Length: 229
Image (cartoon, rainbow, N blue to C red; front, side, top):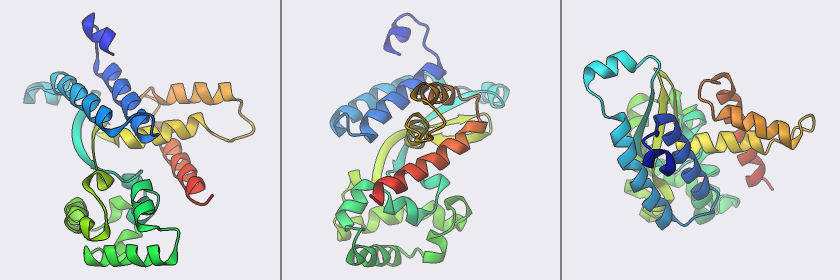
């Protein structure tokens, strides 16, 4: 992306691929948080430059335009496409600090949710189906009570980016990474590594929207497999 930028040939699509690459390195522990934050700050300036438009331009381009925005995301894998409790249980920092593999850890998680005022009935629903008011306050409530349970801000909040193509497919970079990697590392015996590589390459093309949902489901399956090992 930097080469394209220096040649004045950078686009929003290339910028999104740069975001995905930086996020993948952090999510899979290939780069420390400090380096990740440095890269995010650099990318944020490009995001502002490419995605700052007036209202008229926004109305014209909104139907078929890729839009990227900076967000302080919950550091919970695939939470927008999963239940809140499943996402928390599959978050490595939270799972390790609360020791969620033990009965005591599960009890602490229940206490954590209760103290935040989040009923289990809501937490076990798809995130998008939760009560609107409750869903909008999840991030605030987690930050309010996290220190009591030994969690730090970097365990629950991750500065990142979201992508939206037109009026649909709002995806944060971490979700996109989990989905894409699950396609690349698919264990389907009917497919060769080359097939997986080509499928992951197709996935990076945002126009192949029909594959996004399947990739997200594969991402959940992969996370479950890691946790249950």
